[in-house]
Amino acid sequence: MERDFTARGNHDMGGLTAGEINKKEHDYALWEKRVDAIMVLLTNDLKIMTVDQLRKGIEALPPDAYDKMTYYERWISSITNGLVEAGVISPEELRSRMSKMSSEYIQEEES
Amino acid sequence: MTETRDHEHLHQYDPGHEHPLQADQDDSITYFKAMEAAVRNLLIEKKLITAEQIREKIEQMDARVPANGAKIIAKSWVDLEFKRKLLANPRKAIGEFGHDIGPLHLIVLENTEKVHNVVVCTLCSCYPRWILGLPPDWYKSREYRSRVVREPREVLQEFGTNISLDREVRVHDSTADMRYLVLPMRPKGSEGMTEDELVPLIGRDAMIGVTEVTV
Amino acid sequence: MPQFTVGEKVRVLSQWPPSPPIHCRTPYYIRGCPGVIERYCGDFANPEELAFGRVDPINLSLYRVRFKQLDLWKSYQGGISDMIDIEIYENWLEKI
Image 1 (cartoon, rainbow over the protein chains, first blue to last red):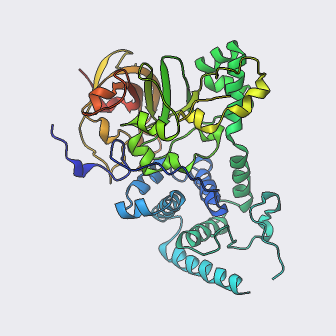
Image 2 (cartoon, each protein chain N blue to C red):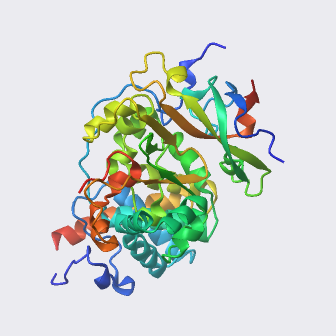
Image 3 (tube, chains in turn yellow, blue, cyan):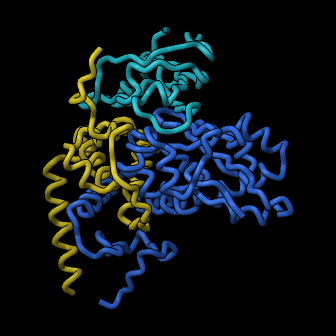
């Protein structure tokens, strides 16, 4: 059966050509560790969603977004979408809270 | 504002006095940091999680370091009976160190004169994090995930590792419920060393399989 | 009772789902390739169902299947005995 390469998911990259491996490592920032903690709490402790659902959400990111986002940016996107999908938070709650977080941050910076 | 922002030192992390947003190494607010803060705050408000639980998870995560794996490897080098147990029932053997690998199923891959093992998760980033902690950035990169299944020897060379052609290179793609720990070969020249002396030789990269251990 | 035994020759299916929006843990690069059962890993919940939030799906048998790199890649440059072991669920395998 002839393979249709357009069907390969962007995340499913085994065997593709790629460049030299960048071995530079970064210390995990606190916000990143929090994303990981939230992920474990939601899937392992609360069981509100499965890790598989979250992986699926990451796989669904547009190819450009997937490649430009960092690892924990992808995870928080998927967690957020998953929570909205599960009805735990509403899009409006999220919008207004994100806007509040940004402006509070700017206030702290200026003080 | 005179309040200290010592955010990288967790013993000063006080959930009761937490600002909704805290400066990290990179002080610029990004869309995703705002998203994390918003989600965290909403989940706490809705009483689904607490700041204390987040703090605990982070502390647990920080306690998981490659040295945990190194101690297991070092013991298996000096104690053949332990090595036999480790290969036969990793969960039980690792339990002797007080580590609970949780819902994982662990497979320990022994490197030999005939076979060199190397691990990847091409689809995402599956990794024995309950023992070794969080994986390095390169393990999750497009370059590693794409290339190591197709040209493992070239990838190993980028890590300074050359496996002779008479040894098999065996790649393991961690696609489902198994997780993998490579048991590197004990290096030549280490014969007189004690278990404690061996531990610092064994790095994370050798337990992923991109390097071998040397004295 | 797992349907495949260690050492048995199998082939990875080329079938639906290819990938998103469906979740699948059989990598694209291995589809259609012949290999050998290396071990039976146990029965686990099907990730294709878990990805849709179905928390109590039927369990599937999971195997590790061993493939020769020379079979997999047309221009493989490594050792002739190089292998790759991949975990694959039974619903993606057929007997050869």
